[in-house]
Image (cartoon, rainbow, N blue to C red; front, side, top):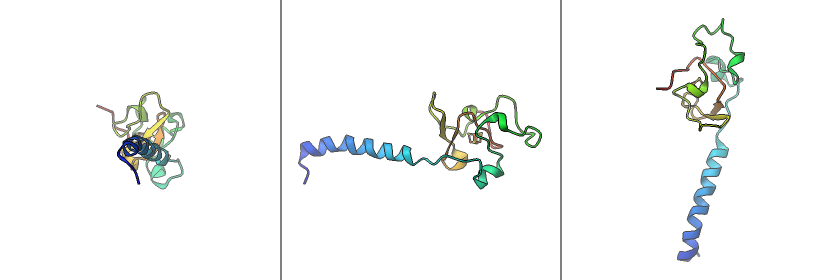
Length: 100
Ligand code: SF4
């Protein structure tokens, strides 16, 4: 049984553990994912077929997309369009929309 002192110590440790588990659970989107394929997702914008995806605009990339919520300096981050799966900061898909 936890006494008050041990309980107060336990809370930050448990919280940190839950946050670490949550970030570790973020699934990375792959180009082979059926939804990713449907939206033409590429983890490197340089691999986008600009003929097939005429909606591509030069300079558009996940980092500048409204759906992207990754932290500055990180190589990938969550994308709302893919249910929070992580995408490459250098990626792109047809759902790109300029961050406001
Ligand atoms: S919706 Fe935006 S952030 Fe998500 S994969 Fe497409 S371009 Fe990248």
